[in-house]
Length: 128
Figure (spheres, rainbow, N blue to C red):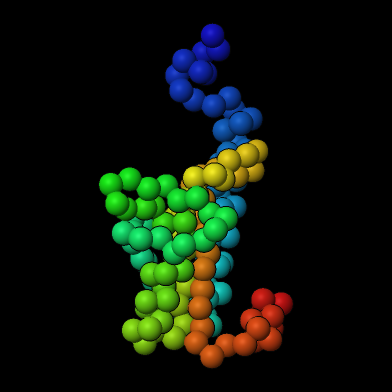
């Protein structure tokens, strides 16, 4: 067995690539947060474990004991909109049971945002 595997460490090349990827991810998240903060959005955090997920025909949730891991933060964020928050965003972990493949895992990071009164044209301008 390779000595690096015995020590639970990655070979130097793989470690360097992973470090580079983690740094890129951190930079991306920092930029996304700055983009929304500069636009007047409030970053929110909603529960990951919810009593009832939003029913979606094509999304299988991970559930146990009457609770589910959120497949998206949509339902909780819409409650915040109903409570009067007008511009919110969230970067969070979401879970979908059937999502598995070379580029898909059951756990993923999702960006979701809402702005009351914003049209799809406003959204297109913001994203350009």
